[in-house]
Image (cartoon, rainbow, N blue to C red; front, side, top):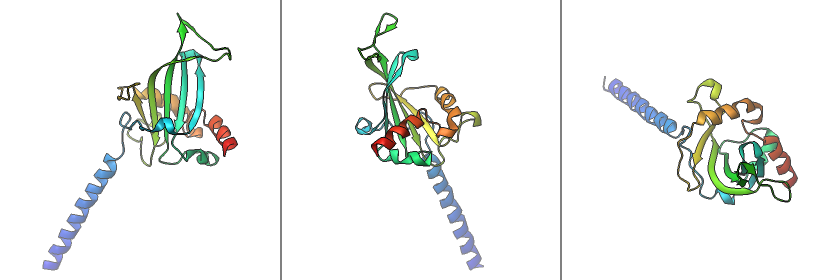
Length: 181
């Protein structure tokens, strides 16, 4: 009888510890708006530079955490990938965007910073039509403070890109990274 009571106590303890482990795993899966802005991202390799968006009057600078460029031949970014996009307002004169002698938009003030981060099991707490694999999104102001954004817009824009791991311009990035590596 004592052995049976001890065995039951061990089973109860193991299930309790398993429950804690499950809670820790769950707590470690951030939701949109909870991914951190990496303090050193400006020192990372550029994903793409000077992306021209005349339609939105923006110039974009995109960064990728070191070592990720090697993921391109596999067609998907590995877990642990972080992408950071700086959105700059294009300089304007009235409603007209100003272009340099090279015909490109001139970068103005930093408006926002967006982060995409990918990890195992992340991004599953959203409706199926808004799932972007294992990616989670974050938004920050120029001062680095978190912004309250409607991340369904981010997810809806990236959702059609399942064949490109939900990342815009992945082909362009991979072509450039192949030349470098």
